[in-house]
Length: 390
Image (cartoon, rainbow, N blue to C red; front, side):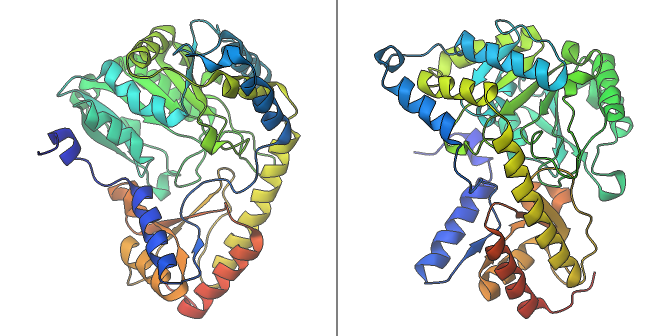
């Protein structure tokens, strides 16, 4: 039986391909150093685990949870937003719990997109923005993120006829894969664009807490009027090393949150309540573990960027995320470079074209391995590449 066209039109998921390459190389006995997938290597803080264990033993948490999430968890999100950003949220109408932010990002298009509608999608960008659009029957209009523009989209370049057909615009700062950041001025421009064309902004803030050198990433909602035109996705995955726990949230404009909660109520049964209570412990507890995680990533960032620059790259140190985005050397495409360093150095990097057309010519490296392994990866690259030219 042939699969549906919506599935035929989807490319293989980027990170599934990377995982397959890692498995194949390890089967051959190759010592692989993976800088490919952004999965934190540090453990979840112990007070969060302890809360999970306690609540998992409570039979009241063994039944179906509500699809929109515990009011107590949504209240914790609202309190954290007010403390962290000075943003007020109604926990009952402006917050919905997600099975990780990826789930909500994939499903929001089903709330608004009909066949023929357009979503504005950054390129390079997290693949799920476009995948969700296509699964919902929509069309992707690419917002190029170029190095010369600080990896910010030029919203004035979007044709007015496209903007009028657009339903959603995805933004993501601090940015995956580039590590770029956005200031309030850009967010103000985005709010004005959304008002002019009746577009819902979907801001992915998954990396807001992974910042360096004193930089503080703003919430999209710190800009006046933002909550009237958008929602923000966030997650406990990156700051608390909880990628496997699958808990996040969307917050903001009430009718969009209601729509997302409504579609979730028809396709999933929510997040295990013990995990939600553990999430409350994360949001209400000490942020010292987050500061320590950032310190570790900053140290790794410095080692990786300085090591690459000693080989001929001219990279600035990113202010946020745990990624380093770099151009491929002369004579390579994104894929040929990634294949070469895997085959000759046993190092996994992510080819930039996996994030879109405008990612061609770049590759991404994740800081989610120990600093000694990063040093070993750099030494392997030095033996293979020597001094590089661009």
